[in-house]
Length: 382
Picture 1 (cartoon, rainbow, N blue to C red):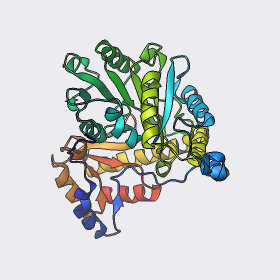
Picture 2 (picture 1 turned 135 degrees about the vertical axis):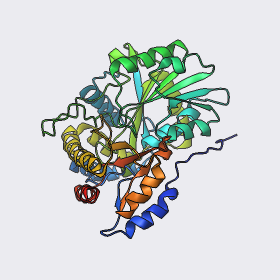
Picture 3 (picture 1 turned 60 degrees about the vertical axis):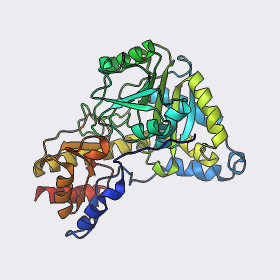
């Protein structure tokens, strides 16, 4: 039957009128809506891309499963940044053309259908729901997926989406809560789908010091104390879009249960979901360049601090998020669209919380330049 129909309020054309208002404001528009990176790609990545531009993996067809070097780089990164030994837990990996593609195709590649249920948080990244709809499966939204009683006894549950750090809220799950999700999912034969794209962007205990270490990262679903030493029934998604500003490179991967990865890889090969060869080389370089990740971490920590202070000055009740790259606030008016209108008058565009399942909230992105964040802070403080 192919892809099924989907429905979602997640439509960026809905904020076009607010952007027109913002562009007419004094000083023009400051866009804090989409989480698109603005900083330079690391030199190591650009050099690797150039060197690989005429490799056999460039003029020939690249490997769906990734080159040996890329696969080694992913394993090294898991060990250095996530305290995970992929080999020890019998995990495999497959690169994806960006993490959104991995999310959107997940339910389809796992062969879910109309009698199957996929659990997700009520407030979450919209593509979880869209991907489940595309497969023709059923969506079950719960307040907190760590409250396993809310889904463990529901007939037909085949997968549970976890997002830590969370887009949009910034919430971070402890290892204990994640381990509870994994254990409960295994009891009913469901797969844990852990979206960890912001894993190295954590701010709990951040000191605004250059000594802050992003490698003190949030718990991974494949960490031994979370998955009980086995990748069975667990899939983790990660992206280099934020840690290395490689959103346009479309570099991400899925890691976990080797039997599930093998099946997904076979389908991905047939439909041509393959990262270009030179980009695979660039991805390997990005994973190994942890010093550049630390530089980017410091940039985002500073921008978030400025943004949080400015939003407080404007009247929002908020604090530094535990993780991710967004400040999530309750609308002063109680309605995201009313606040969007007021913010647009001073030239600022946020994301309406309705996109993420919470129309009473807004999301402000820190993926803007230092100059843009400073200008937004100035306007919010007036």
